[in-house]
Length: 181
Image (cartoon, rainbow, N blue to C red; front, side, top):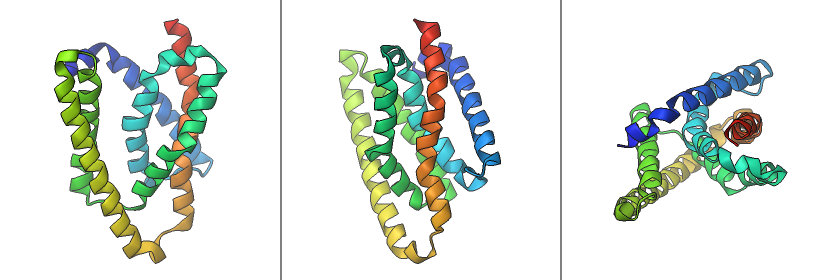
């Protein structure tokens, strides 16, 4: 039922992903992005980007929405995203983890819509919390082990990525909010 519920939104998600791809191509030419950031870019798109897209109806509220969004992305979520991006798991783990997180997030969001499915939301939120703690601990172990070998320039690019992706996605969100309202 979740996939059916997303049916009408598929073209919107594809359009947003295309817009983000154009942003990334421009950023690559400007030296802000390289293929090493592909995993971080996909993670941003599937988690923060889709969340931003689905909150487009708030964009019509005015300039405060854009300022709040930018300030919010510079805060805790960017620090956590950057921290998690410091370490990487084996490819198999990454390929299983990202879709699992997206599905759990979708379960949580859809289950929150109906009172009779609150238990599904609770379970999905609990699993998300367990996975988050495991990822944070795993990243911490990796950072402690590899601190001397980490590339500082790549770290700066990784830290800046969610900030400029969010900032440059806001015009798409604004236009979408104009068409909706």
